[in-house]
Image 1 (cartoon, rainbow, N blue to C red):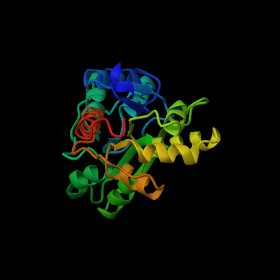
Image 2: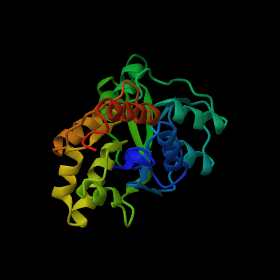
Image 3: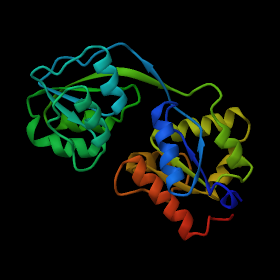
Image 4: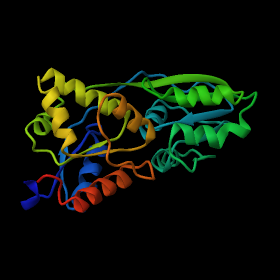
Length: 252
């Protein structure tokens, strides 16, 4: 189908800012045709991280919003969930004290477990953060405060990729969070194509950025074909395109 011109069509669901643009560039560099269908819209709360000896950021967006609000770490240590979040923190002029080997909530818990007993920890993130991080830090003996820096909503009009999937015109989907899975299915339902879109996904390559998203997809009845070893979009895109290549562009 699309392989004749722009390559296999791969849906990507990142917010409608430089992240979706970068995702598109990555996919094009791999020979794929990106289908940009933002499933997340950022609504800042105006909050800043609560004071604590350790502040944990779980996204580049959270760092940027805290910095824009004038927050500074001061004497606090800063932990970042992955390289992109750490890079944003350093760009804001902050020192980054910890980046886990595994760029997930579970990875953060594993990296912090030995140092947080009896310590106050602030987790600064969206309103859709995983319980894995809060529960894991509490179990390790930390006194945890969550600061919600932004809310994530489904943009009005999202769902073009669901129509493509329903029509059998989507080769792959690259889900970057549990919420993108939920919002894709909700958008499909709103358009009256959920059953057909699910069938389209079953015939496509479905990639997810990490185990939590894979678990959500499975819980929603979506079969996952690809979970990269590294929780980054570049790794996800590469794994998805490799799977398409290995399978001869799936059914197309």
